[in-house]
Image (cartoon, rainbow, N blue to C red; front, side, top):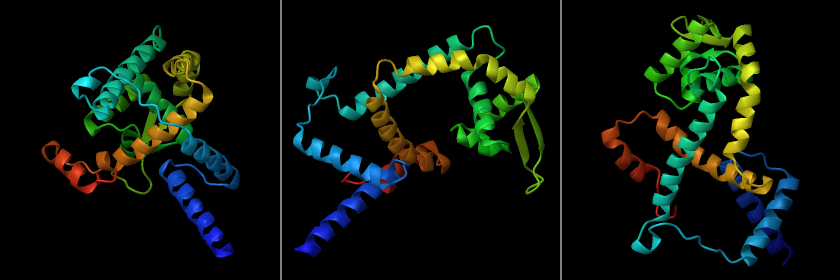
Length: 223
């Protein structure tokens, strides 16, 4: 009996660590206790399925999610555009590139572009604009002479600092009236989706083959 209980606990720990790993989170005992409490609550709670436009006509949950992602991206761009008013920034990608360089330090051009989930031509245009503004500088890589390393300059840090209050205001508005617990749950779900899509994006599969490849290699019946 004792061994069965131990096995059950180990199985729960395995499930918790799998979910934490999928969400990109660290697994410790306090998080495990919180996970247990939430699991118990979920098992007792009845799932209330929301309604949505077109549901009675057969519109799928996947269709709604995809549409909402498109809408939310447009809302976020609207607020970002407002945050850049009166500044020298042309696009939100410019200050996102600078934020990444400030947070993670100098990096190769392609590393910076991939970190922002963009294709090379678009990313190179953004880097070119940042160089023209004097917000970043480039130098040869010590590891690969063919590669250029991009670093933020003091001028770039200054431009960021001036604009950060409005940028923070815009990011707060994007999350609307979500309470802290809802934000954490949204982060968990979006991180899980990001971990699914990032390696597919990095694989550079031709558009003509992309949907079939993902369906065959990444999606399963259980998902």
